[in-house]
Amino acid sequence: MDNLRIYVHVPFCSQRCAYCDFVTYDDKSYLIDSYFKAAEREVALYLPDLKKGALKSIFFGGGTPTFPDASYLAGLVRKFNPKAGAEISLEANPGTVNREKLQLYREAGFNRISFGVQSFDNDVLTVMGRIHDKTTAIRNIREAFAAGFQNVSIDLIFGYPLQTKEKFRNSIQTAIELGVKHLSCYSLKVSEGTPLEDMIRNRLLPEPDDELDREMYWMAVEVLKKAGFDHYEISNFAYPGYECNHNIGYWKLDDYIGIGAGAHSYFKNERYSNTENIAEYIKRLGQYEFPVAESTVIDEKESMKEFVILGLRMIEGVSLVDFRERYGVELKVVFGNQILSSISDGLLSNNGKYIKLSPKGLDFANQVMRKFM
Image 1 (spheres, rainbow, N blue to C red):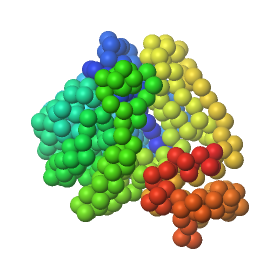
Image 2 (image 1 turned 90 degrees about the vertical axis):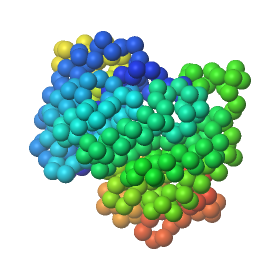
Image 3 (image 1 turned 90 degrees about the horizontal axis):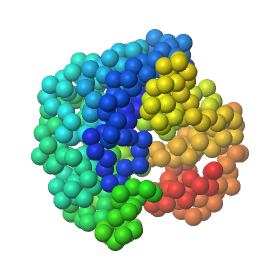
Image 4 (image 1 turned 135 degrees about the horizontal axis):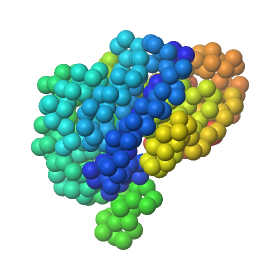
C-alpha cells in the first residue's frame, strides 16, 4: 500500500469559534497529557500497517493542534515512518504559536503549516469569535517563514455576515503580499447548533447572501489566478508545486487512517470513525482497544460513487483512465446517464481524458455530485 496517509485529530481549543461544528473542546485541556498517551497507543495498534516508507503524508488537524505544548506533537509525529520527502502538515491558529514553538515543529519534521486565519479584517474576526487579530496573524505567518517553513498555507472564509466583498479582497491581497504558497477559500457553512446559527435565527446577524457569496468566490478565482496561483480544487489555490498532497489523497480516494477522538478513516475498504468522547477514547485505548464508534464496509459500487464525487472536487476532474484501471470498467458504462444529463445541463464537460465541472458546475457542485449518489 504505497499511498497510505495519516490524519491526527487534536480536539483541543482555547475558545470555540461562532461557526465551529468540529469535534473540539475548549474545556478539556486537563486531558491533554492522557490524550496523547492514548493516541500513541492507537498508533501502536496500527504498527503492522505502518510499514517503513509507506506513508505518503501526515496531517495534524483539529481543533487547534498548536494549542497543546509542542512536545506532544513532536513526540507523536516521530512514531510514524513516512516516505522520504513525505508531506507532514500542521494546522495552526494565530495566537497559539511563536518563533520558538514554530522552530520546534520544524525540527520535529513538520514541513507544511496551514494557518486558520479566516480573515485579515479585525471587525470580521470579532464577529467570528476568533482569538487573534490581523497583527497577530501577520506576525505568526512571518515567524513561520523565519522558522524554516517554506510551504505556508492559510484558510480564509467568505460569505460571513457583515463581511463585504472589499474586505474579502483585502484579505486575499494581504495573503499574496505575505508570500503564502497556498490558500483555501471556504464558503461559509452555517451549521446547526452553532452560536452563529443561533445569532442568525435571533436576527442578531443577517442571513448569508448567496449572490454575494458567489461574487466573492469568482473574485477570489480571478485575483489569485492573476497572482500566479493554480485553482486546483473547488476551494483551493496554490503556486505550482505547493498543492496540498494530503488532501489530494482524499479526493483521489487513497486509503487513510485517522488517529484521535472523532477521527475518520478510509482503510481496507471500510469507512469508520472513532468515538468523539475524549474520556471514552482514552479509556478504550487504555485497554488497547480500537476506539471505533461507527463503521461501514464500502463495496465496489459505493467505491465507484465516492471516486467520482470526490474526484469532481478537483478542477482537472475525474480521470477516465484512472477509473478504468481501478475498477476494470469504463466510467461511461457505470455513470453514462448522470454524465450525459449533467453535460446537457452545462454542469459537466468531457475532454476525452477527464470529466470535470464546468464554470457553471462549480456554482452547483453539490447538485452535480448528488446525481452520482
